[in-house]
Length: 304
Length: 304
Image (cartoon, rainbow over all chains, first blue to last red; front, side, top):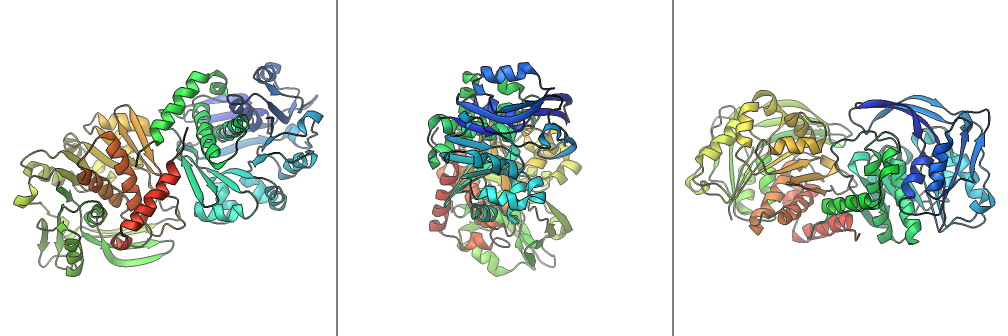
């Protein structure tokens, strides 16, 4: 079951209370691909990079089974760059710099092999770009998920609402859910947002876990309490990648399967934050994932 | 199995973004007693009030099975009074007024029938007062739990540490855990605090749920996402009351029983916040508790 994802492949400079990492590999597409690759092998990555992006990083993704036919490389241009600083409370951060570079006029062209994905994850991108992907599909995927952010709500709300009408699952954080809905209560926000289109809504609360809303059901998965959260960058994307990677692998998007996917997304996100960039996602193996799955079971299981 | 609790019985004035309630019934002891009474009937309340406290409130507690032999009533004096204002984020609040009144020189005297409780919950109080209760016991209870707050860490840390050495469970919130331990990470904080005495540590995170640490085990219970949190006052005390009420009723303080108790504490706290003061705790019946227990099951259950 092919899983197509749209997401940035980029450089990040990150400051946390524990250290600084300069121009490391980042981008939502990078995190999603690495995270999903732990569950599923039929992955396609739609994105754009400049001539500055290291060939060995691309080779590593391909070695994981990620198809890069849809990764446009622009000679003479630079990759997207973001710099940010996290507070002691790692749920909050300030953006220090954003250089769009290749993203400035990006208009994705889907290769032939990308036009019939069974599963689609539209990572955080301009809603107009997300829409261009949907418009090039030859048939509707079994499941379409998307991420977005406050920035697009500020400057492109109408385009965002048009995309929302076409997706099954929206995956956003609590502050984004509040801004999108105009409601402070997440229960009320979930109702308003699901009237905009998505039948499923996942609200990420960072270190406080994530909620899944569908119909009358609400499901919650905690984040694993960790000794140290080293760098939260990419945790939300890793979560989304693990979530969709699991669903694509199972080829089952029932509510019960989605609950499990939420746990697996949290499992992989719990590794992501243990090191700068996607480094931990590259290291971990099946045994590590399995041990952490058991940690989540111990954290959540109770016989009432 | 008798459950003895020490806790204030008081008046509160509360402002939230949704309204204001003037001089309503409050106090940790009040919330604990009402919450515990939904699980257990052999309750004893150790506290002090002034002549201004309404007789009908005491009669209502007695009708619930709460023994008030240890409730000292001081003629010519006034009950403890607290006033506070909650922010839009109901996890944060400012104290507007604190009038100690009868608490100023309170030194609890345990009636004969209070000296052999099987279960003891020391609500938030000056550590010296908590110690006076422990010193009057004729034998060690099966389980001793306590609450405390930042204020006592600021002005009475040594007395607090002496009490901590004698308790089995400490129930505090995340900010208190950070201050007590000097560690930001709750995993590290839990390790430091358990070296101070308590074998079990419960860290309450308000709307973000609660964690139980014991040995190598960590268990998490979410808070129920609600349409509206009307007034968070007393939620933590209701949680502690429900938790200890369930354990006393079951007379089982194994780890598995404690996990269930954590859920029942959350169940009763989820009602507490739906109205000003302890009003919802007085209204709810077994059917309401049962329905909400099912809501927690739906929120938490997943087959991995």
